[in-house]
Length: 443
Image 1 (cartoon, rainbow, N blue to C red):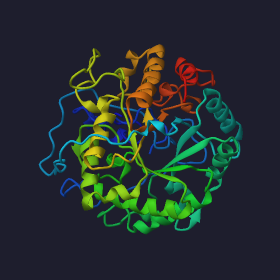
Image 2 (image 1 turned 180 degrees about the horizontal axis):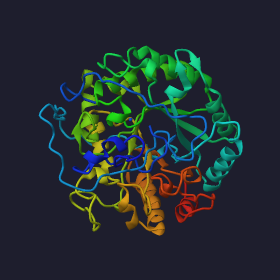
Image 3 (image 1 turned 135 degrees about the vertical axis):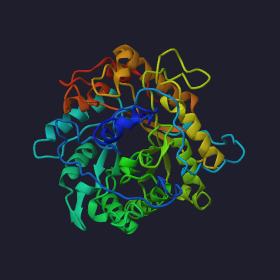
């Protein structure tokens, strides 16, 4: 999705005004995210984690898990890669899929706001009721490592215990995206994200073991092609090591849990201090160590943008009729087809895909989301249903999709970027999007 201009993107929004930046995740919520300016994309990175409370989401919405809304700068010409940018390796011959995943059970999911404080039980139960009433069976939310393990082996699991236990008791499947490195684990030299990758493996083992049977899937990091999610510099090698360590931890702690590749933020930028084109980033990851990355995840996570574009439109052949946000493929839902092709070209068609963030905002007061005024309540409802139809009938590779978002409007103020994406109003009453998804057939 477009770069989300929220907490994490505000710092570089001024620059975003100059180029069509990132199509951050569709919908904001669980914020869950590269080459250096002077090094090749697979070198290390500096990391400065900015902790966000995972216990009780604040009314300002700053505690969004990895889901940050699609925040994109005004449209403009595609940026010219800096001189130090090393392009992704040229992929081999285009391959076609030999696997049809549509026979697998589909995960219908919501990105949800949650509370882990002493007074959050009613909030979580109301959310659970909305999930169940919609006919969906999955939820996704973010847990920040920096808040869960504030110092080495100093664990603070109670807030997460509360929300995980509530969903488990209700029989709802859970996908947790883990992100935000604690400062104590960051490499002080800035050569790579973490000083010791084993620390992350230990953390993921603790998590997977503690919530065995209650959390069915773990998404390793959020939008790691966004510099603000990786300590200020995008380096594919950093994520390679994160996923390798995180996967080892999850598989040791709960062999039945699925490991999900962190969804990338859709964009066409190649500046390691800001972001990295999601398509090229994915090819770079597959190019490391002869495609070794494929060993470390079970499901490919994708974040698909949408802005004010119909899910059937796609750049350049059918960019639609809306003005702006239509001059790059990352502004379109069907970007997923291009990302899937990278998987196929690297022989990874046996892996299914989950769209872990996608959605449309209506009129939005936040800078960078002005395009939302072009989306009516009814159009958003139609777009969401059509996106599910594409994912379940036309795309043979998708086995799950998580709408951004269900209920952040109940915690964040109306002027925040997050609220207009919600399928529920601030008073928990349903919007047309919720009603349409509730009525949508689910197989």
